[in-house]
Image (tube, rainbow, N blue to C red; front, side):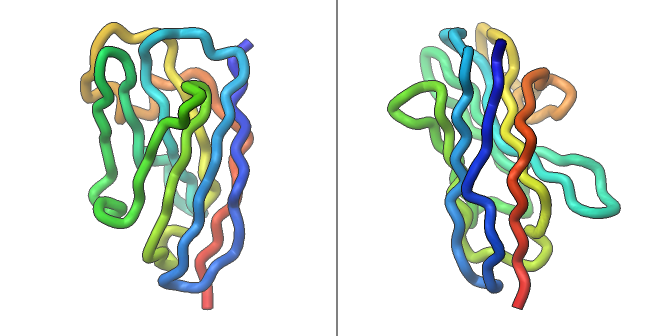
Amino acid sequence: RVQPVESGGDSVQPGGSLRLLCEVSGYTFLSGCMGWFRLAPGKEREPVATFYFGDNITYYYADAVKGRFTVSQGLAKNTLYLQMNSLKPEDTAMYYCATTGPRIYAGPWCFSTTEYNHWGQGTQVTVSS
């Protein structure tokens, strides 16, 4: 059974940084999509940063986080990180790690919430002064 588990959420001041970690147990696919999503109060869950991994890696970012957040895959292919810099109060949300099943090639579906079928429980990020 594929199970992502997130960690690293915390409360920080605006302008601060955090690094989230996701460890995915049971993931044996050689290619697919992984990434981070967030859910803020009163809003729908939205993609933040995802990537396709296979013969190459293709990254996808929400416009709101481009230049501030970086998603990466660990040396152990079942881990991924989200480095968040220059955090803003509007980044406050529950952050979720998720994975798809096997995918042969990259495409815009890697940035679609509905494409993901394995979700973690989330880790809270709060940005406030």
